[in-house]
Length: 173
Image (cartoon, rainbow, N blue to C red; front, side, top):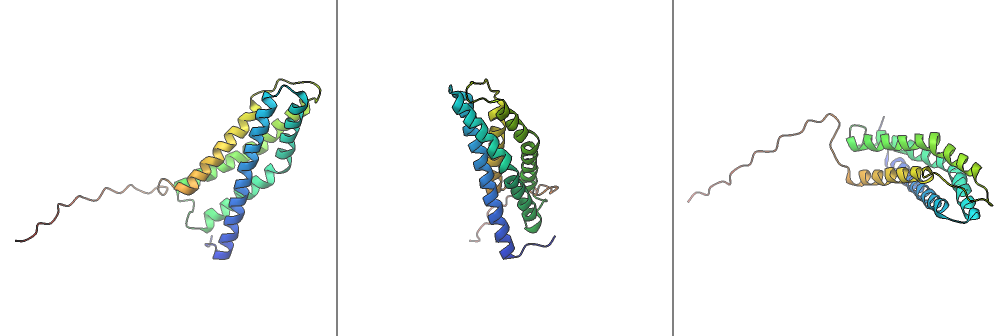
């Protein structure tokens, strides 16, 4: 793939950062609502928190995650930070895993939980209500660190031997 030209690069970076920040914000919002649903003693509050979690996850999680993954892939192949960098591959694998978990586990789990809630009866909720948002928030925060720190080297790159230490040159007197 050709490298992105400056205007396209900027547009993809903006879309990637905006969608990634939105995805982290969504995950943290789900975490706050999940903690509220687990700890409240008011069935109406539990119902509101649980149904809000389901509404958020079922409407915006997929579009936000899809944009973050797609723009990340475009940036991976369209910039110098390609798949030959270990941190890029780790970030891609973690992001795709988080997206798959959102599609296959988080959304269906929150929908099932919301379906069992009753605004008049307090339910005993499983800790799984907050497990997904904790894991996804950790993944997204880790991706931020990887993007900023850019650790490790290139895939398959041999480590260089340290340069030999030279003794200081003697001055002629």
